[in-house]
Length: 353
Image (tube, rainbow, N blue to C red; front, side):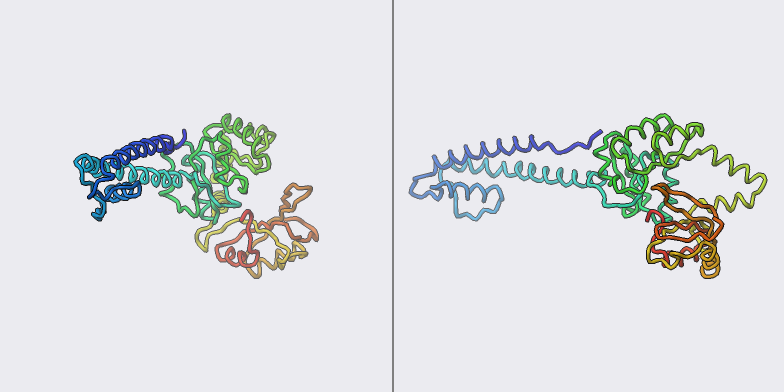
């Protein structure tokens, strides 16, 4: 479904009709007024000036018709000014309304970069957005349901969440969400089959992006990975693991659930990964030394290291040996709110930010 745009052809035709009618009336006015001894409308310029005075209701009185038919034409000018004003004001209002509507529907685009693009809107997507905003991420939501637009704009600030009204298969339109500059695309459609078909189609247009999906059927995980999905998550698998953990180790389950979400309070814990830049103090530092320094100075527990090997990310979970941290690596750490704020000053950049 496309946004209804102003009918510019109709406006052009209406303007030409107005021009033709007024041109004929001006010619008739000159014919009945021109050449008379006491006439003040003797040239085309005089007639045009009188028309403008009448239509704008200024009425200087320096150009007046003196004949009966000249006054009748003036009477037509005077009454038609109401219609002309109505036409102009209506077109201006229609144009401004269209601009506001296009902005509300996201058709003007966004300047977000390194953001998360969510294709499809539902309660699950709403929950995901809340956590992303809490982590300081910007999100672009694409929906084909016009009713979702107002809901999203009401719930979230526009500097954090951009909304785009578009058909999902209109891939040119998706450019307005700046999808090429997104860090990851979350395909949040209704069922697994629809998600798989869509992934295959969107990969033809945006092959180099990272994609993530949640699956109702965990057996399809390898199928989605072969289709080019970067991360596949089985809802049932996660919930069943968490439920089992609550049954036989409830404290571990509670802590795990807390780690999966953004820490809003200083006493809440979070698991985050920070990018190691070339000027970082831990560059060329052995992993075990960084482990003790982070714990001592920041009350942060280093639990893993991510390195890129042949263009692929490799997660090393609490590696042994004298492994050194290099620029471009990511450090995976457990921390509370205070430790997170201190590390943000030290590392300056987090994963994806």
